[in-house]
Length: 164
Image (cartoon, rainbow, N blue to C red; front, side, top):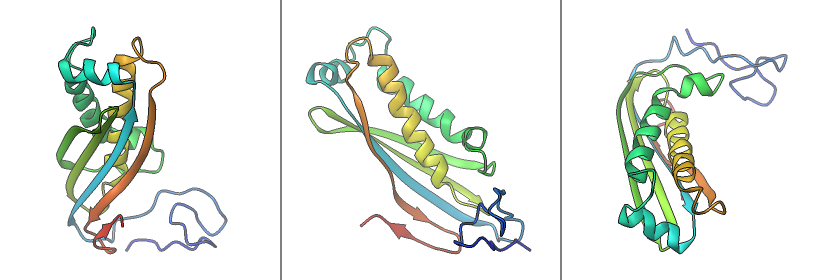
């Protein structure tokens, strides 16, 4: 049976004494779970045009950043100390320019497991955007990462959640 949190504030990653702990999910049923996260990197118009046209000296910026995002989702438990290793069944990474100088990364992660994949989706977005920064920093050191956030999740005891 999964242990219930007894922390004073109800935070599951702390015990009654306020010490960090990994949540016990052993009593939770397996269920299909999905999380969608997104974020934006703001850049100069010249940098955005370079990415759109495929003219970056380091190669296919969005292709490399897509692979980085996928790798990050798969390795989230190695980066976030109290995350469970989750068998991921699917990861989709998409890129678009909702505005001329704003590049959006959206990641969808799926699993059938005892815990969700929100952290995997958020980590993937962050690393994908950081990879864009790394590949384009010689042209534009002023890029800014913004609005990394969970947009949607499904599954588990709490069910469905959507950002308003």
